[in-house]
Length: 551
Image 1 (cartoon, rainbow, N blue to C red):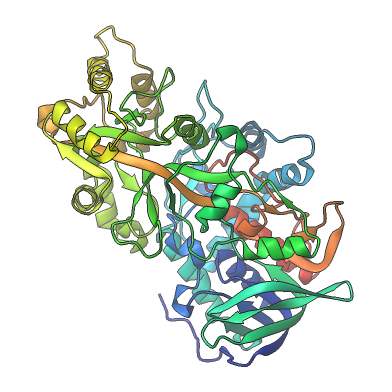
Image 2 (spheres, helix red, strand yellow; image 1 turned 30 degrees about the vertical axis):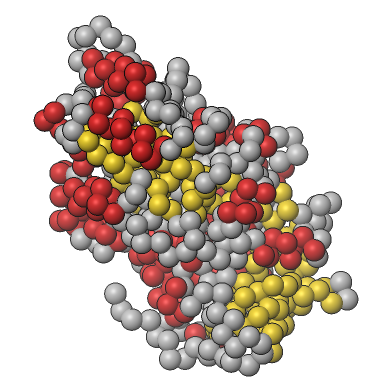
C-alpha cells in the first residue's frame, strides 16, 4: 500500500482556527465525512484527541466487518437476501417503540441503501472484502437474528479498513484544504446568538485553550463505552445493578464528553442505556489502558456455565446467536460473570478473539496463513491466551479443573457435581444414536450445515475426551464495546432537539449519533451495522453540507 501524502497537511500549533467545516473526531466516521467534503473546495479541520499515528479510532482495532444486503458476495455464494427480509430481521431485533420514529426511519434507510452507499462506495475507495460471508447473530426458534449470512469481513480487518480510508484522505488531491489537529480535546460546542459556530477545547500537548470557528460543525466523537463509570451510570435498569467488574473493550477516549456538550446546547440525547456489550470479556494480557479487555468469541462446542459452574438453562447459551440475550442471562445472576469449559481440541478449532490485533492473517492480508487457520485452527492464539491471560486455566481432569476454577472464584462456590453432570450429559449427547437430547447439540448441528461454520465448528466433539486434553476453563466478564444510543439525528445527520427541530449547522455521525437517529439498532444489533452505520451517516452529513442528494 502506498504511503499517504502527508507533507501538505497543516498541523497547526496556533490556538484559533477557521474552516468551512470542523469535524470532532478522526475515527472512521470523521475520515469518511472529510473524504466526501474534500471533493469540494471547502476548508475542513479535523480535531482529534489521540496521537496522529492513531488516526482511525476504534475501527482501527476492530475485526472489521459490515452488514450488507443482497451483496455480490451473497449472490455469488447462493445466499438469497433482500431489503424486505433484512428489515423484517432488523425490526424483530430492534423492538422499536411508538416513539422511535427516527431510529425506524434510519433502519429502513440502512437496509435499502447499505449496499449501494456503503459496499459499492467502499470498494471504490479500495476496500476489499472476503468472498465468503459470515453468519453471526443467527435467528433461532427462540431468539431473533439474521435469517441469512450478512457479515462481510474486510480483507485487512478494521486496521485495513481505517488505513485504506485514512490513506485516501491523506493523499487526496485537495489535501491542501484539510488541517488536522491531533492531541486536541474538544470540550465545548460553541453557540453564539443562537447559532452553532464551532468547537473549543484544550490542546493537551501545550495545555492551551483552542477554538475552531466554522460554518458547519460535525460531531464524530464516538460513544461512552470507554468510560466504565458512564457505562454503569447508563446501565439498562431491567438488568438490575451493573456487574462489579466490566472490562473496557472500547476506545479509551470514548468518554461521552460531546454527548454532554450537545445536550447543553439543546440536542436530544436518547437511548443511552442501549449499550452493545459482550459476554465473553477477558483481561488483555498487555493492557494499554485501565480495565482493558478482549472479547472472546465463545466456542459453540464449549459449555457455557454460570458463576457457580452450573449450565445455563433450560435454553443453553450458544455462541453465534443472540448476544444481547447472553449478556442479559449472565447479568441476571447474583455474580455477573460466567465460565466457558472446553478442551484443547475445541479451543484450537473454534476459539477466536474479536479485533485486528488477534487476527493477524486477515489484518496483514496473509492468504496462505489465513486459509491454514481456517482449516487447522488457531493453536498459536490458544497457546498465547493459556500462557498470558489470567482468565484461562487448564487441567487434566474435571475435578482438577473445578479446583482451579474455585481458585479464581474466591468466595463464589463452584458446584462441582452440577458441572460434572452437565459435562457428562453433553458428552453422551455427542452420539446422535444415544437417545439423549441436548439442545446445544441440536443447534451445533444446525450451524454446521452452513459450509463455513462446518469447517470451523467441531463435529460432535466431547469435552471430557482425554485425546483432546487438556481441559480449559475461561472466566468471562461483561465487556463494554459500543453505544447504541446517542444524539438524535434526521436522515441528513442533522442534530435534532427534543421537539424534533434541527439545530442549524450541527451534525452528528457514527457512534455518537447511535449510528443514526439516536439509536438505529433499538435493543439489539445484527452486527456489522456499526461500521456500516458510521459510513452511511457520515456520507449523508457530507452530502447535506454539499447540498447533494444521496437518497
